[in-house]
Length: 499
Image (cartoon, rainbow, N blue to C red; front, top):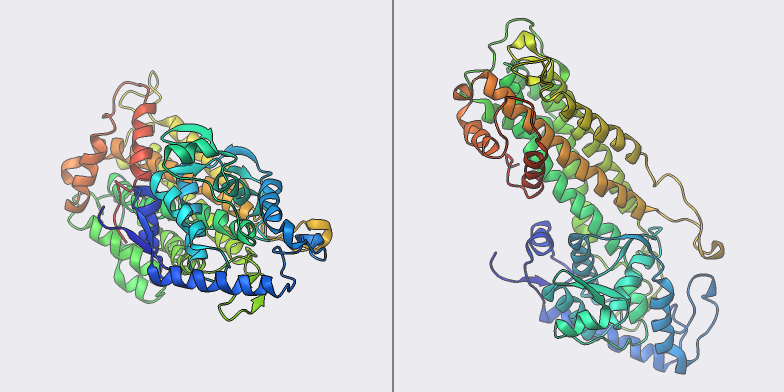
């Protein structure tokens, strides 16, 4: 890990976001972006001096937007907004999700259209750099007017209230800041609203699921290639000419990767009992290729969102104040639903190949991969676990974005529920990681029976890595620790074939 990630509100990449969120890379604000923030803040001061009505600055929120707030109450309004909106319930978000929220909210404010002071952005960045992670409950956002409820809990820590994790300890917000050498901020008009009125919660969970999903996908290419060899599968379906007459880019890319992984194998194309393999092998390019294209489809939307101003109203440097709806999470809701279906299919394909590996005596593998079936059950129950994950994903993949419940006495009459879409997507991504790990475990045993010395050169080292984690086939034993280690390895991106 080298160098800081520079935030300017315009050019944050998926790769840099991954470094900050997962690897702890440090962040700094671009001087040019800070100047934009200052210009927007000065414009807000001029507006306040003119006593023009500005939503959430000198008016109430939601249905209370017609209520003017006196000048002497403007700072109190911002503190009250933070306190009243911190109404979440459920378990605290994991550290990675909170880091994503801090990163994306800071970068959005750095676009320079939110009217906040540079000091607010600086505090968010320092909280991120020094590991002050607000306790943010996972439930409460309806995905419109931004992620008001979860971001309310972030705002509490900014003003020295609420709770935060610091170096593994859950502390009062003010104490966490102090231990990190930071001080809470007294909010200026608009700053409480600017903290709350964004899409950082939705975006963070979607981004986490995207990263985990890509890592699971890379590992699934390996597990598919090993399963192909253990089952002595036919490689004709991977031929380039087949893909060229139905030239979906993802299909062609996956077929190319599998050809590379299987080149030189002494196991493939050695089964003569049937001229066609089951779909989960034969149609790997079509199934996994479609999943890959879903990643491509959503990653540009993620890239746009992480470099967008998503609060309301927006304060332009020339003093124009525009109320709009950039906080509305509809695009993120649909992105989350697309990715949820794709990752559910990825996990489902793993479960089907697991089933093949455990029931292929005709291909030279003992039933359930047990050398002594009967007194031993082998890996029979791993397919049960995979089936339970796939069944759970089927429920979680039901779209939350097709319905809307109005809020704020009907003023907010269409909400995206993208936060729910993102929340369940994250669970599906975790399940996909586990499903791939289960196939890898089964493939490790199956290859041991088929003959690891005959593996293709490209998969040999990958198999040796698996063999270092998972013990060889034999007497029934507890494999939970090996499976957990394998899940963590997939989750960290340590096993995979890059695309």
